[in-house]
Length: 208
Ligand code: ATP
Ligand code: MG
Image 1 (tube, protein in one colour):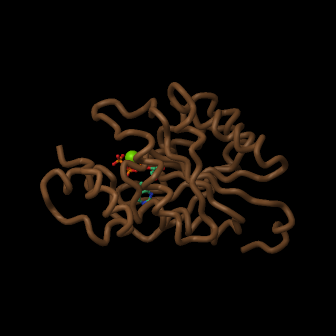
Image 2 (cartoon, rainbow, N blue to C red):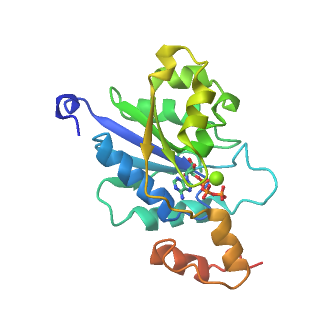
């Protein structure tokens, strides 16, 4: 951790569909918190995701509640309903701006998997986004750093310097895999916090 930067408050935002949240998300956020000396990481489940055609995303309230359960044991983590409460599709730029208003003067680190960052050019106002906050791109299994570097090579250096890369333990866990396992009656234990597993069972999510 760079102590010389610690005077400034640093806030991480971990966005995602979190349908459901799992240890891949939690390990990534914790890695970013430690590596970048973040004072807090806010988990922001998306409302209606603009880039998720193809399957019906669970109710935002269920995803928010599962996120709250998952972050409860980490004093540096919290969950926000900011996108869940906002009508219409959620865009990262709007979320970052809203967080900046809530915490004036903080430096924001948007934490994302490398796979999500590879799509950055499709994001609304990505060039503005790269000016107002930093990005932490975590590698996950199957996504190589050089691919990302190649993809972002054409960005102006002022924007490029706001993207940092971070290796996280190779967790080949995805929400898709978890949903499929529940649907097929296979175990999901040890892929996500027990409290989230219980929530899924009690509310019969993903079984239909
Ligand atoms: P789905 O399979 O439904 O796409 P997901 O597991 O990819 O779900 P998301 O909610 O889409 O989860 O991802 C939220 C963020 O977490 C994204 O930036 C994604 O890249 C990152 N992420 C997801 N799974 C992992 C993992 N196992 N390791 C590191 N980062 C991850
Ligand atoms: Mg995903």
